Length: 294
Image (cartoon, rainbow, N blue to C red; front, side, top):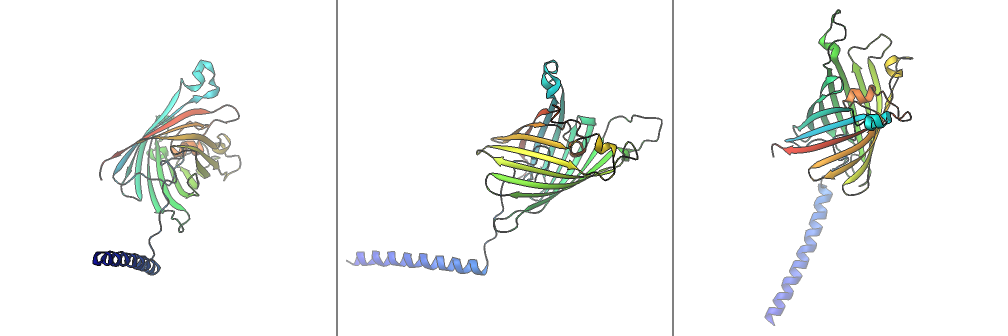
């Protein structure tokens, strides 16, 4: 009898403690609410296809990215629908901390060396900050031989700068979108009629169709600051569509694009081809992350 009473007392005691604990947690949350949860995995990697996303490499990790673009699909059977030609970029991105990344790359397009700094100002939070805001500042150095050796040639003439603000939002588990206002500056242009500065309004999106597969798109609209500027009139806006496939530690991106260059200033302002003319390039990106410091 005594044991039964003791068991009943213990059961009632634990019920009361449980209710008291719940009440105490509610009171504490009212006084000091728990921190808002950050939106995770807005995009699968640091690039939608060509365009930067808000995603960064984790602190202490190194990401190897190999990007490849073949020739035009309208090259026909003789060119094996573009597979006979290729353009490549090899890049390394490193996470200095959770907010700051740096990256370098080498492009076969114009033998360009490029580098960038990416910094996260703020991250999207559930029931809080509606956007992730990330700044990207990049530099590209054209290492081709100067075309005219009889004139004064300066190293500064090889340099192009790109500054971007990535405004990204994950709307739900399937859909993420970003708006990326961009400013491209050329230290040297071919003629005085060309624009040294080219604003670009860029957009990107991701639609997740399964746990490991998503459909991606990015687009860049160049803004004319001069009437009939040759470096606006003679190029096209970049449009790329593709599929992301996550396989363990790799992310494999397969895409179709009218942009042959993969460096920021190249695909944003130097896209030669048009989709409607068949100037489409098959391409892929492969990324692999290595943890250097835990």
